[in-house]
Length: 165
Image (tube, rainbow, N blue to C red; front, side, top):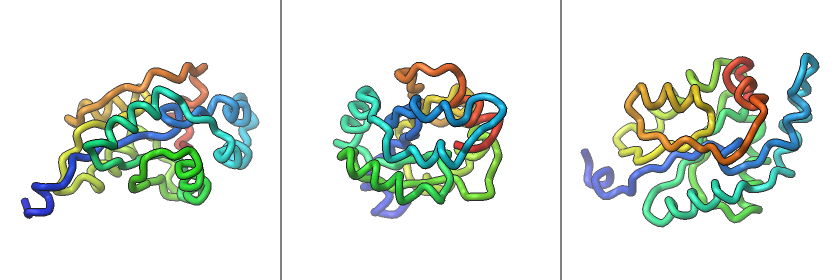
């Protein structure tokens, strides 16, 4: 371990959708057989902030490096960064799904987490997807399950069965 690694803050990894971003109004676009992913992602700028998610991230930012790890596709980076800034959320690196990656979030996120954590200590990963949480816990990562955004399972299906967010 280098001197920089030993003095670096531990990492807190935060999911966006369902953790800090209230995506419920956008879910209408991906329910049922005719899913409109373009409209779903176009609504990112209108997302409200989930108060519980904000409180957790702000608390962690005091003594952790914040890293946002989302299944959102890379093409939404600009809207996502603007949303984070507009809502005054703590700054942090942003890791996103590549455009062609349609694997379930439970497969994508552990791989991205391994990449971003090389040589660093991950103190906590906060996610709302039960399958992502289970996969991360099984791999030995410390997980806080975000259960503060009630959902009708639409977001979970999008993350795990459709590989879209």
